[in-house]
Amino acid sequence: MKITMIGTGYVGLTSGVCYSEMGHTVICADIDEEKIDQLKSNECPIYEPGLKELIIKNSSKGNLSFTTDIDEAVKLADIVMIAVGTPSLPDGSVDMFYVEEVARKIGKSINNYKIIVNKSTVPVGSADKVRHIIQSCTNIPFDVASVPEFLREGSAVNDILNGERIVIGVDSENAKDVLINTHAPFNIPIQVTDIRSAELIKYAANSFLAMKISFINEIANLAEKVGADVLEVAKGIGSDSRIGNKFLNAGIGFGGACFPKDTLGLISIAEQVGHDFAIMKEVVEVNKKQFYKVIEKLQSVYPKLSGKTVSILGLSFKPNTNDLREAPSIKIINELYNITNGHIHIKVYDPISMEEASNQLPSSVDYCHSVKDAVRDTDVAVIVTEWKEIIEQDWNSLASLMKKPVIIDGRNCLGLMHDESVTYLGIGRKKDKVKIVN
Ligand code: UGA
Image (cartoon, rainbow, N blue to C red):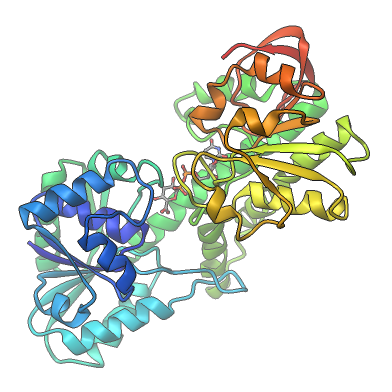
């Protein structure tokens, strides 16, 4: 199949590259000339393990190319996929501006029958919107479909190539047959459904996972009050296969480009049809407050934080990405500056996100070359992102470099042994004196 992917963000680029890996001829199109130039010279604009290798491999085989000429790219395609951004508007609803722009461009460029697929995370009813826009520009027949993407940042290539399901939302037999054949090489179970259900599946999946996280975070907050350990509770409930043990890691809340946006998106979709999705509103509220647990724990050790040195370890919203969108690190650092009127020394370390973070953080933040540099002479070390490099440190010797050996583990990622050496505060765990046993 000849596939044109419009939009080379996370979803568009990774899925476009993976379609080419499956033997399709893929053109990735974007209006961002700099990005397309980078891709043409085999540079990968995002940090994503395995992606660069696949770009080089499939570009050199001739089944992957990059262009800013969207008109030509649409004309050459059997299937046009829309994978442009759908940011949140201030009221939480989804901004469809870019999707609608692309639909208009497709409508102007379409030259023969094509299937137009929404890959972007778009509200229920968006495929119909795209259809109307294209129909207002042309009489050429086409079908619309929804094939949502379930990839995670940091494991995107693997998630696409070894996913658990492919959802295809269609309303025509031809689109159904073509899209089933297009996805057959992935060898992943395919669920064919109607378009609106496919659109809702994407929001429901992300919102359910976000709900699991907010739920376990609330259990963690409760565990601290009743003297229980959230790790034990998560293990106990997670071994019931009806609950499942994934996405039960309590911490300082979910971030990134998806869960925060999609939970608000689902609330807004519901509101537009007069449905009050109260449970999702609580999921969002719990998450808004969860980063503050770090501040409370800091204050429980040092009631006056002014004049203290705090090390923040990990800045990206999760490991294996340089993405800082909705990252708890930014909220924590800004709040620390806020409550101390800037009278605080913040040292940070992240394997790859420091340069990007410097645009968003106060100018006096101290960027360190290593975890060791970051914790030297500090009053407290806060683990915000569970990078392997951070977990696998010799934490007992790091503790000896600190002014006082106090560790706040915002991701419950360190292994512990009861000992008198380190003051350890996890999330949903008892405050303890421990030895780290990673
Ligand atoms: C998420 C979904 O997992 C993907 O399936 C989906 O395709 C994607 O959104 C999307 O819509 O594009 P992603 O945002 O990349 O993927 O990251 P996740 O690995 O799901 O983590 C999201 C957030 O939840 C992170 O901040 C992570 O730290 C947090 N999290 C995750 C927890 O706090 N606890 C957990 O147990 C799991």
